[in-house]
Image 1: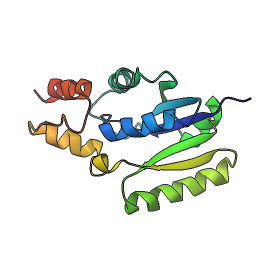
Image 2: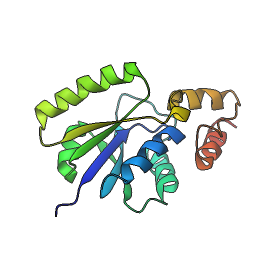
Image 3: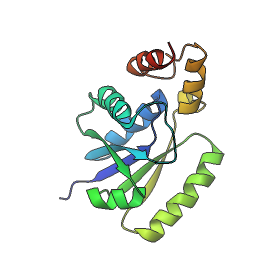
Length: 160
């Protein structure tokens, strides 16, 4: 039987507990989950690609069927390149759904063999975004409820 590979992509700048919840849940549904950092040349992330790869590897190391990678270009092309059969998208609220549905429909048009699956974020993490975590941390706030300890430590390193 063919291995089922799912891709969960994002900027993960930084990875949050909400992201990790989606990864853990997806890991129970698929043989292999690739957490992929999208590299956008026009964006200026707080953490470098290598730093984000390291944080993701550290925070997902307990999940045997999860691997971490980075890609440039269209996510759907990356998914095809690695043999991904599904794209996992986390949803926090209705606005996420409208945006994600539009992308899912375009992806289905370009690559009908790849399914998009929406996983609603657990209630505890629905209000958390990476940008909110960065903002709180940049002002010396405690983000330990929203991000794993490795990320908290890395944020302290960035903001002092």
